[in-house]
Every structure is written in C-alpha cells, then in structure tokens.
Image 1 (cartoon, rainbow, N blue to C red):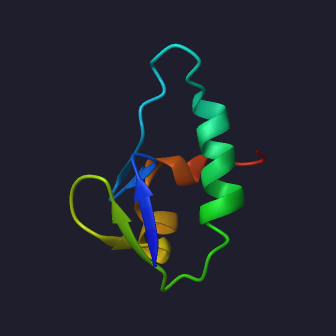
Image 2 (cartoon, rainbow, N blue to C red):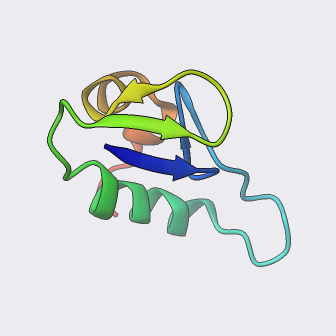
Length: 68
C-alpha cells in the first residue's frame, strides 16, 4: 500500500508550476521510487480514486518520461 498524497493520482500527478517545482524532478522521483514498487501495490492519493502501480505505469501521462 502506498499513500501518495499529492504526488501521484489516478491518471495524473502533482503540480509542478509553483516556485521551485520541477516536472523533471517529479517524473524522476515517480519513476525511481514509485514505479519500482510491485505492480499490485494499491495507491491511495490525497484526492480522488485509489489506483495501482500497474495501472499508473500503463495509463498515467508521467509514464511517458523516458531516460530520467
């Protein structure tokens, strides 16, 4: 189980448009720390519906970032 807060949502991810925000850093963190979790890990975001790591790796727009 993962409580992702405002980092990873079903089909979305946290904001990076605020001062000191970085889309590349957020993508890197999600890929290196969250997407390495088992695919069946349940993800409970700070808002919205729960999801799984497998679903987010397949459908979340942040998954398209490669080589980070």
